Length: 280
Image 1 (tube, helix red, strand yellow):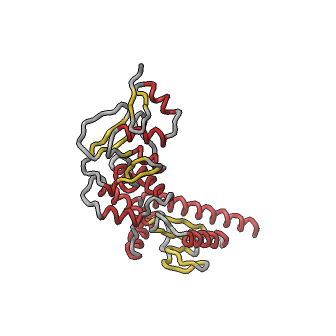
Image 2: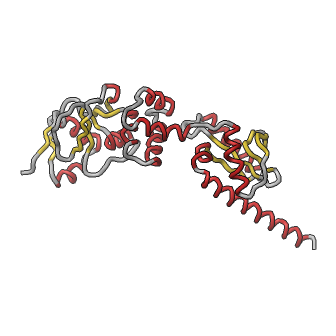
Image 3: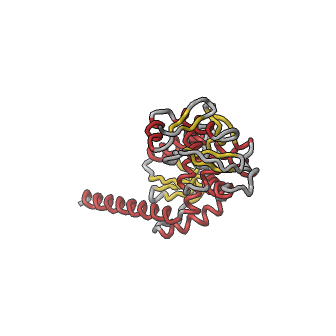
């Protein structure tokens, strides 16, 4: 007979190879709840399992992850146990009656194992589901300075939400435009009723930058759409970069500018040839 994990909920979970097939028939919420209860008082779902429960990430294969606020050496088949005596009440909550790390603590834990794109995706999902917004997350990280994962998560958050000053933006962007073969643009001009960062009127090109990656309000999003529509209706070529791209990904910005400049030049040549033919 296969061994069983007895939970304090009065349920049993089969161990061994058959457990994965058995567990696959059950909902993640029920299985996670039983697994946490099986680990005893103070156990909470954490790391990738918590991310899956919060819908901000995916659970690792073959094991549900649980954290214990004690140095206990207990083991459970099919459960990856993290022993964390420093885990406090502020770091835990319940979801669907399952003890779990908070979205903030889950993001901190994920930052120790995910790459930049992975953690940014998790931050975006937490924002989208109204679990925690960037300003709240930043404030919480300020209160946790020195804890593992906090500095790394703060770096990713700041990289996406910081703003360059107007002078710093121009200092970094204008050389990229020059290297792309573009002439010096006008800056801070009003075009079609909207202020744009960089404008090449002879080329019909506008470039705008955005320093607010996360959680733009509906009003801001509506204004963005109106601006884009006005520029498109006027026949302009428009590009939009984030401040983060200008600061940290200049090669990408340069590549896009070069491709755009080449396309505009090719279009101008075609227009000249058509005009020459029509006047013959």
